[in-house]
Image 1 (cartoon, rainbow, N blue to C red):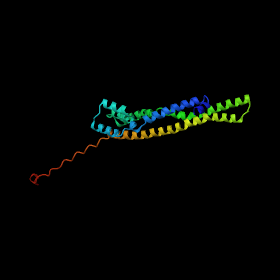
Image 2 (tube, rainbow, N blue to C red; image 1 turned 60 degrees about the vertical axis):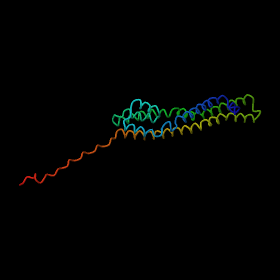
Image 3 (tube, one colour; image 1 turned 180 degrees about the horizontal axis):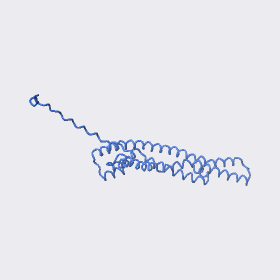
Image 4 (cartoon, rainbow, N blue to C red; image 1 turned 120 degrees about the horizontal axis):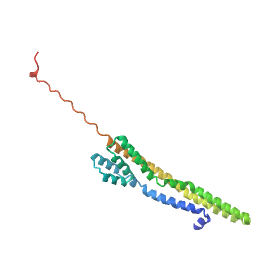
Length: 222
């Protein structure tokens, strides 16, 4: 394997660097985007119960905000729970944009690696072919098998670039779809909390006073 990598020439260096960066991003995103870390089970229901019983204080909200992306979104709504519905909804949307941006961290880099991997491989192949043909021009084509071997070695860069780019592209699409699914779930839970904060039960209508029938003896005789 080491001989094959060395045969690709100096153009293999950026491809190997891209593979290392892509591997680090994939491992970090797999750990960060766990469902238990983004959407803790039962958290939304627990927060709605806190809001109904008014068991909230600044320290409580701070702990909720730093616990998970969903907790940060719900804490943003609870921080302005006494405001009108439109202002609470606007705060949720603003916080949601920041939360989504953090969940998509490094995904643009992973997509860039998926894009430039084949280009780096093609570049290395072209450089290798140019070097081989320059040697042929200087020394002549005395051994055709050596030329065929040189072409095979030049194509190593293309194979290496594709080997890095294909998994990077697949995992990039996978993480983007995972984040999109989390966004839908968080929006649903935030809407439920918003309804609990703003939709109060309608007050019961006051009962009509009963008319006391006049006693027969109180009637005015005509």
